[in-house]
View (cartoon, rainbow, N blue to C red):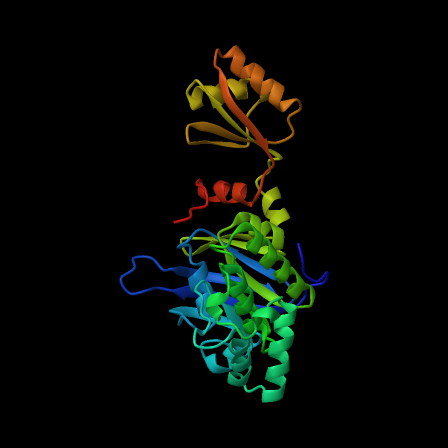
Length: 323
């Protein structure tokens, strides 16, 4: 986790923020109340279609709310969208680099668009290319950049005017593992220098690695909010065991509970039994023995610790969708 040690000031506040699109039976975002603190990396976590991107769109003035309010860096984004845009940086899911400009020009003209002088824009563009390890491509077309490099350039452009809040919407979607890790490192460096970041993602590991706090959203509703550690502790289990056997999962659960006692929760996934357990000694040997006593055979057994994925499953009864 990154971020400052002391986080006391809210930089984003939403009250009953709602977006209903024409023709939709339910709101894309429904009565959302959020408070993001200055200097933190705040994650909006949820599957595609959960309302993350719509929420980010309302906070960045690209989507007009149907109801409620949103304040970003002290500015009402609905009443003063032009001023709000001066205080935010946005990296969207799509590549929005100008194909007619060179890599350096994409930065330089962004600075000029925000009223920064020619001299300062030139210097800042050069400095950012050095900082983001893109200097050798300064005069190249953006077509020459890999996906990870293009993403770094979009982040550099988004922070050019020193925004109060940097919004990253699924920034690592489609990137290879190496590029994803490089972008994680970059986000950590920016945050360590005081940059507030709002990150929308459907990658649980990304949220666990980067975010100071996480809000889990599904079907437009806020399900829970807290630090990754707080949310993981909330499911009251210290071990997750997945057992695949020759028998029916219901019979398998009965056999296991007869040996170790009631489990915190259980579910069947892809024909395997997944159980959440707390405070059980010699857990694996007891499960193996229980299955043997029941006359069943174990085809596979996996033991893990709870994660944000476990929290999402506990809240929704399903795995994080990637639709």
